[in-house]
Length: 434
Image (cartoon, rainbow, N blue to C red; front, side, top):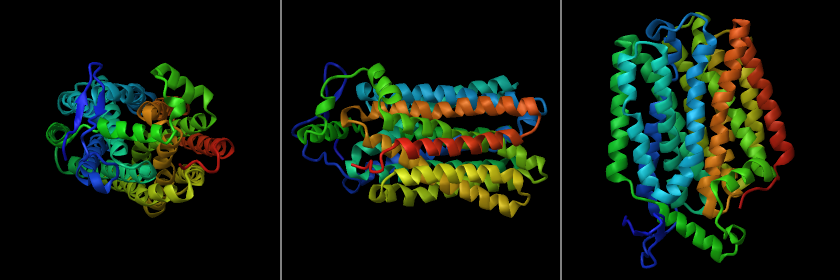
């Protein structure tokens, strides 16, 4: 595929008028689309390697005191803050400097992480590694998603988000299970070092050597929308601050979607922070715990191959609302039951719920975003969404520290998910697809 674009004096990319091979559609851009899916898979492996091993072995490997629940939650709080901020600015930066450059920068920021795992003398170093992890995730995940949206047709947003989240969260589940197995067979630090270094170097090399800049395709989206008079209201240049205000305070649909994105991260945060130590406290092994949590990730990822495209046909709203409620029910059910088989079913239920809501929240934001500012408005959504990691982890860490048990966070997440789903039900129009 030809890199048919030129760069202006303002460092923004525009479509080359003579480049007839720049066309929209997944099939027409299948090679680059597939390479960006591979990028998402590698980004998912990078975050997934921390899901089981780090919380479960925080005391024995990294010096964290027993029942120091707030400190345990602190690394997810930091991750959420950093990733949220990166999401906010990544879209705007990519509109100026290009998706590929920001993607490469994201992988470069992750390079020290394997060495921190290998040599970290204290938990504070693990917290610092999550700063780098948040930078990596905010930059790389955002760029790989935006590039696929650039390449696809506007009518394929649900499909794009579905396959994107399938690749990413299937990788999260796989990495969690693989690293849980590695640490039962080999030394913990060395296993994490070799796994993480391999993934990060592979992501960086592929980003540098195989990825094509997709801003020309994004510009084509804008030109088509403008020609159809669908983007007339976005013809004036808007700052990031104006777009943030629009999405956070002025647009009722975007407000509903942003709050849902924030709250749904409470579910992923509790799975990340507390499920490994909860399951181990119930007498099962690290590998068994990893297998249950991997079911959540793999079911979440695979189901999005259905729920993403389905939303293009039936609309996003009902899938989002029922997904929020299924997740809440599954989280509340876990401490009320007591067997590996039932926990596995509950993990699968939560995974299905996440598959219903997760890709379709992002796709719905795209529905309400002018093509010219789509990357920035999705960045605002991703800012609020990943702030949920920090807010949820902070509240749950304080709850667990205060009560010295893990029951209150489960009830908190379940209730929050139900209320958030109700807000979407009441505030979002029934038909939101373009």
